[in-house]
Length: 513
Image 1 (spheres, rainbow, N blue to C red):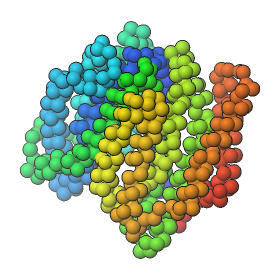
Image 2 (cartoon, rainbow, N blue to C red):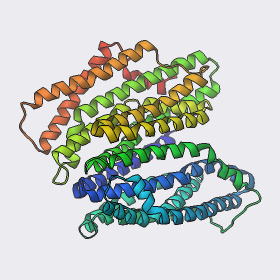
Image 3 (cartoon, rainbow, N blue to C red):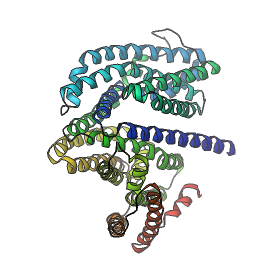
Image 4 (tube, one colour):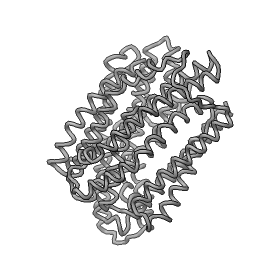
């Protein structure tokens, strides 16, 4: 037990260091490039790159291959498992190379489709960047499968460690090459980073005895059945990338700088999610999965699930309050400078608040999604999330195109909440035996707190800030400390005022008997 805790603690520490390095890299991006058209063109090319990576479904295939690899290794031996890995890697490589060749030819059309609001010259530059990035896709997919095999062989910590090395080197490359290469320094840092990650993973694989074979078929491994598994998530992947296209394409019609600001803030979201949500949801998933497999009293399990959902919503309310109170000052410390103006900062804060409205429900969403998976309802999740993403894409483009900034903020909130609602609906519709949503009385009180908390914080800040004429980083730090303290006090006042359950009872639900 203590050994496992040390491993988890060590991995969490490495993950936090990696996240910090990622934030530093992003801060340098903002300070060097600001909201220039050059960085927007880079983000556009990068968005198309992610679409192709997603459509290859290498991530899903790698995840599905892990249990398959273990089953083959345990039943037929290590060398056969390595051969099966080689068959998948070789066949996927051939498919990806064909896809990349087609993407290279169609690059101008694809770029015009993604950023129709940009000038022809900007579209040409995005095309060059996109084509330069195409080999990166091949390397990324190879790394994903190599890491999957290392995970199966219980080589822990190397992904986090290589990410740290990658982060440090990427920062140094950006610092020293920015003056000469400008936005192309980001391309160079991306390639150097992925090559370092692959090299270190290959060293780990060699030490572990993992071998690669140039084989196309393996009698003991049905690769056709394996590759057909991607059909179950293909529609969801296409719908998700359709939403990605709708957001980027519609934002391209907005004033210069909006795409850059949106992408900067969007990149913060997964970093916060990995630190604030993933550790909790992992603990929830392990505990609840064990309960479902052994719990004979469905009523007792329902009650526990209701409590966990209530606590997750209260946790989200707390984080939302902090983001409203200290978000602008935090962004100011990170980003404000000659290339990121006060107007840019104000817009980034509005987009941040829109993201954090959804982030209020992020742990609630993660808990419900993992619960539905534990109940065996993953297929329904993918199906309904496909509809949610298609609906969001349909709504997002006209919202942003016709209503500009207000439309963008509305589209962010709508798309996130639509996705978040899916596992709750699936659990209510398909898992009634073991699932119950929080009662209506709690939901009403929670929504009242969700409205009351930011209004009080914003009104109080607006009046107090009228008397303050000091600026600078120390003023921002003082503001953050004071407003965080104020929000914490207000938060506990609200949950007691509305008689909401005390959040620290969560410890008993997770670790209690």
